Length: 269
Image (cartoon, rainbow, N blue to C red; front, side, top):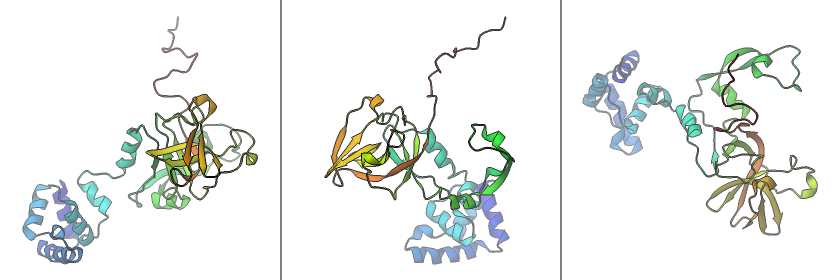
C-alpha cells in the first residue's frame, strides 16, 4: 500500500470519517492559530487516493487525531528520523563542535548484551562477542535510563590537531558538563591523568588541556601536535563546557596502512 492507503486504513481502524477528521482538524487549527493545520474532507480524500506528502502542520493534525506517533507517521512517507544520526556520523565537519545522541522513537528496540559468560574476567582484553553469552532486544526507552540521551558529547574536527595523537581528529568525546573547574597541576601526575576540557572559543570549540591564571585561560596542546598555546580572556572569550570523561576514536586512520603490513597479501607458492 502507498502512504495514502495506509492513512485510510488507520482512519477506518479508529472508526472515523473524513468529515470528522475535518471537524477535529478545524479545532486544532483554531487552537494553534494557523489554517495550515486544517484538513478539509476533499484534501484528505485526495491524499488517501494519491499518497502525496502532506505539509508538516497537517501531519501534526493527523498525528493528534489518529493517535499515532509523529515519528511513525513520518516513516509512512519514507522519512526515518533515526537516519539523522547515521548521516551526522558520515558527514564529518572540519571544525570541532558539540553533538548529542538523539532518540526519536522510544518504542523501537535495539540489540543489547543481555547476559555475560560465566567466569569472564573484565581485566583481560577480548572480543565483545566472546564476552556476551546472549543478546536480547531491549527498548531504547530502557537504555535512556543509562543517561545516554542527556549526556553531552563532542566531536573533534578533522582539522583540529590540538590533542593529536592522544585524541585525533574525527573522535567523539563524552563530556561531564558538571565539572567546569580547571584543576591545578598538583592534582595530576602524568599526561594520562591530566584533565582534558571541551571549551567554547571564538568561532567554535576546542578540546584541550587547560591552564587558568587569573583571568587568562590557556589552551595547552599535546606536545606532539606541534600546535601553539592559545590564550583567551576567561569567561569573556572562552568558556569551559565540561571535562572530557570518555573518548571514542579510530586507532587506524582511514586511508593509511599499518606500518609493516603489506598492501596486498603475498601470493602463496
